[in-house]
Image 1 (cartoon, rainbow, N blue to C red):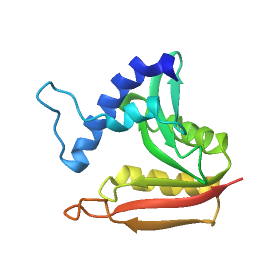
Image 2: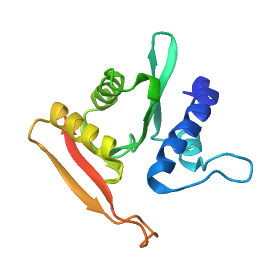
Image 3: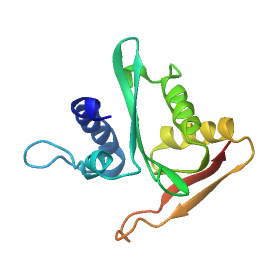
Length: 155
């Protein structure tokens, strides 16, 4: 994953830009979005990054945390707009979930309608009829609506 650091940094900015439609965030004075979670993926144990390509070009990524614990969390997931609706995201999600069997949690915001529909489809494909949707408050942010969390077990 260290070899992908510069690539992931660039893709992260696209990811955060996409989310700004949902959460209203803006870049800082230097024009960059917050990237603490990305940096955690390179410094904290139990994290792994996955890059997906379409052809020989990067098309997206997934960051997973909790690999050193009982629950894996899909901390970030992004597919470039030019590769969406082609199965790239479903392929990446299936690959990531299959990479480490066990309990998974996938957070997203209900306001992100494409993500909400996507993750429900992915959960049903990965664990037919055996997944749950929960709503949890955002820690330290009572002003925000709760995040949606899909919980599933992958064999």
